[in-house]
Image (cartoon, rainbow, N blue to C red; front, top):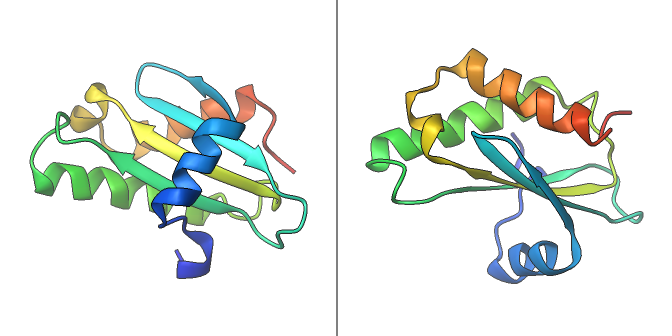
Length: 112
């Protein structure tokens, strides 16, 4: 995923947390808000230390980034999205993470 598609700054995370909407399932929590001035969506990923060691946390982040890379054409371009992984994600493979993410995005109609 290109760096222009990522949310990295703490202030941006906090802004989406405060002003955005959220929804969740057992594996993932998503905060999102619309920014009509954007040309493409942006994603921030958070995986806490309670999930596992650094290897597991980085694997989960790679899975989520790859999911967004594959779903890039389907997601609304005006969104800022923050994905927070919950404890069950440490035992999931890539396909299960992708299925969970698709379920959340379709639940809130964040598709084109």
